[in-house]
Length: 295
Image 1 (cartoon, rainbow, N blue to C red):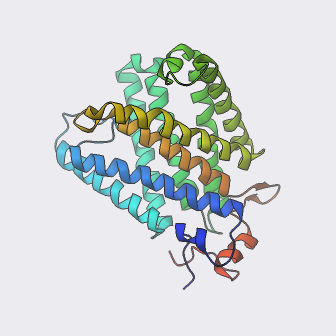
Image 2 (tube, one colour; image 1 turned 135 degrees about the vertical axis):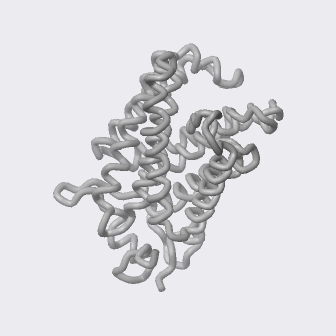
């Protein structure tokens, strides 16, 4: 059996390429967010706040919420350990897609007022999660080109939506930036343009690695400097009202998703999106085979 592509690979005796390090780190960060949502679901007996707007009146709500939390927690742990990654990522992709089709799309008709901003944020954040899961599920020679291409497209289309919302609601975005950040309105516009640029690069296959890497750094900084301080300053977020916890995990997930994209390969004319390339695989496995063939 060949070794799996785990975070331990950072310390592998053979040096890993930059794309592989980005991919492994991205998957670990992404799995932390999935695990976090699962734990919150189990603790509070509820679905993922905002991202999963399941009506509270449906039969068996508590049982379904607990089952949903257990699935997310188990999936997060499995991805973290690189256990059955393709299968687990495939399940997550279907799950996240079901949130969009069964929850977000109907809500646009049931509550049209959400279309002013919340609906777009929830829906396209979920599409990013689905896109990252598709890339993880496609990290094999048989499926990589098709699923990685679709995963990148979902993420590439979603980021400009966030950018447009940042530009439209720049004053609101600026009000969320901590006081110790200079020029908050500038950062609102700057991050809006950065979203748009990164999304276009990812969708078109131009400078994907740079765009996705920088986007991941941006999301990571948001989690550490925007969301985490608000949680620490308002410990009531831990009891009942948990939007800020969910928002921080969204930023963590977007960070991981961006780095998954950055490490998932480059578009090559006539070949589609290649995953890492044979040279990188041989660095990890010492052979011609895929490091994921055992899953």
